[in-house]
Length: 366
Image (tube, rainbow, N blue to C red; front, side, top):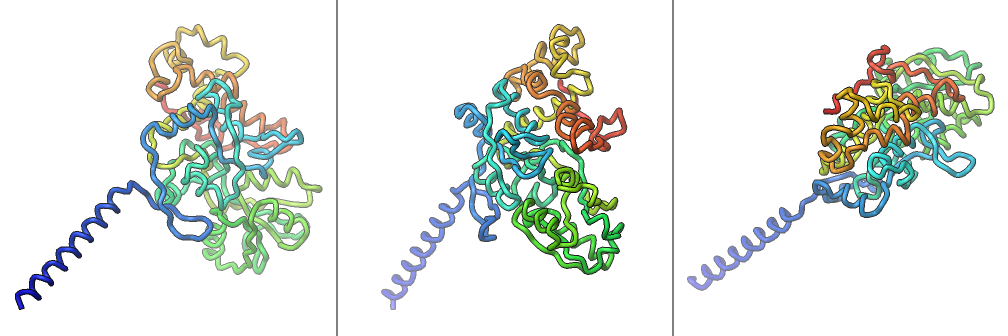
């Protein structure tokens, strides 16, 4: 009997020690969960340490940006094979802040489904691809959104001869949606709210949605209104289509980085804000040299003549003026890609300075 008790006690101790060992091993892994876009399962991705991202980029010599190659005006490949667009220019903003060279970057085109996995796994350093800031993405996906660069809203495009002028008139319609985007849930929420029945038709990318719409396989399609305007301008007969006035959602778009490296988050944040601050100060890529001997302390800090703002971020004190010198201020970026001299002729609206009736506003550079 005593032998049996000793054997039982020994087995219990072995089991306990094994359990402690397994728990200890699990706790030693510094990981965070993220969704796997392919399987829907969770994978384990280590968070970067403070400063790791910047060190890797500087060692590499260029920044890797997740972008779009299918959205004219924001991110697309021109006839010369070069990337152009509003989001592409903000990628160049980050490169200019880091290297005093807006071309020190590589853009990796990503679909809506691929983008967050690429960011979480470290395939890209920053995502600048018409991506909406939401609570779920900010928290559950482990991403940090920098300041919004474009305030948008979701809309719906229909054929002008359809007679459709409101959401209610889309009863029973076949509506195209790009999978992996917020447009799916926004469409469902709004149509459920108004009791409208419809058929959702999913597509892998925006090119496929537009092709189906133009060929008549779907009655309407939905995405951010900026995307609708962008695609309408490049259609064979733009006047044959119209965008409903109603907005289905708020869509704040801007760069995003992954959790875990506040230094890198701060760098992308303040490089982006530099374009807004420069517009407020009246500094452009054409006149920036006039401000390099300014006596205004606000300007002197911004251009790097006083203070150590860049050093606080781990980069050069002239990072902000390097952005403006190479890429321009916010107005220049907007007008070059979306403004009155482009085929889009998109008014700034909310994307104007707060002093002009918009909501763009930069915190102080101090």
